[in-house]
Amino acid sequence: MWDSGIVHGHPEMDKYININEPLIQNINSSSELIFEGFNDDYASENSNGDLNPWHFHYRVFARIVDAQGKVITEQDMLAPYNEKHMSNPNIRAINNCYLITRKDGEFKVVSNALSQNFYN
Figure 1 (cartoon, helix red, strand yellow):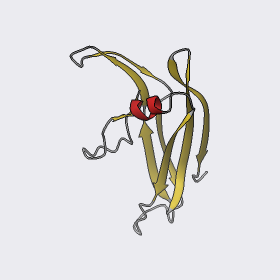
Figure 2: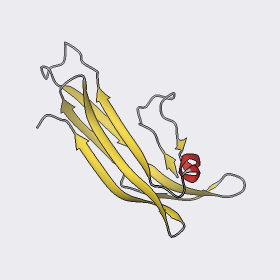
Figure 3: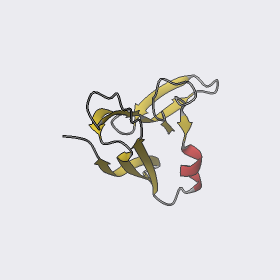
Figure 4: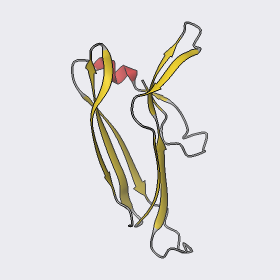
């Protein structure tokens, strides 16, 4: 299982994160995978007054590879998240928490709690 990280278009931040090890270390327990985004890009020249745009994009997927590391299959474990909104500056703009547990020999997302703070 892999997390694409937060996709920024920046090579130091756009990295796949293998989350298998912590899941396997706690195989008999449920694990939380939390994506939290903090909107701190305030700029005084923003044409929208005190509001900031934010863009949060990630994927969580299961991948099967062969012995040479070639990807055989890749399947999203949850719907990819790709949202753009406006919010007040210097706040937690998003908190998305997934509960993952092992069922029938596979890791599965069994619940999700999402909170977003954006301007309507």
